[in-house]
Amino acid sequence: MEFLGISITDWVGYAAMATVLISFLMSSVNKLRIVNSAGCLLFVFYGIMLSPLSKPIVITNGAIICVNLFYLLKAKK
Image (cartoon, rainbow, N blue to C red):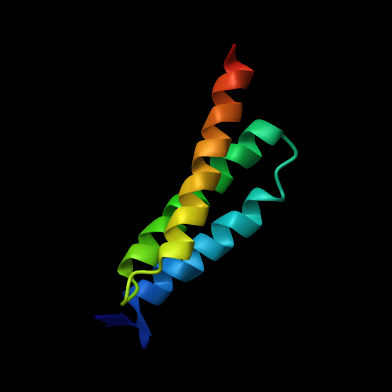
């Protein structure tokens, strides 16, 4: 399936890239971690959508989500 000649998988990859890039514009570290986690989640979906599955993309971004969640929860205490 395509939209404007670009596959849905590629759209998810572009959205992930843009979200991670935008996260580094945040002045608050907590906001950065939240937006970055959303981008990493999109990258996980992107890695799963690729054929064949891209384990390095899924594992790396899954780990980054865990690190972000750890520090966000730590900051709440």
